[in-house]
Length: 174
Image (cartoon, rainbow, N blue to C red):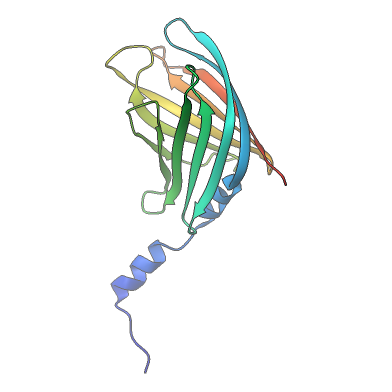
């Protein structure tokens, strides 16, 4: 005897099947090293840092990235990012948190027409004005299967995007 599923169950199952956008995210999966250069704060102080990132698939629909580095004071720092695609919203969605920050960042993005760039947009605490919120983008670009970049930028009062830092990732082999 064949069991007939409720049509509503079929709709739910279909909504949760992997889409091409979920497959696109698999490019991030792997072990990476990175170097970051940037400047921030009212004085525009420059900084450099490096570390490792481990990205794994969470089933067929999500990825999770864990980044390890050393903070400016020499203590270990960890950041976690989740990314997926929400077909109902037609957007990539995700979160980011760092062990050195109390704010949970919520991302939303459309994949650029070039199919290589994902500009993750988020609202967060302003790095220029205490107590204010600002608009940010973490623009991830797939350069090739072993190299990618992330450019963090903030929307200024002048209506222009201002680059805060660039991170270059290289896939580990072996």
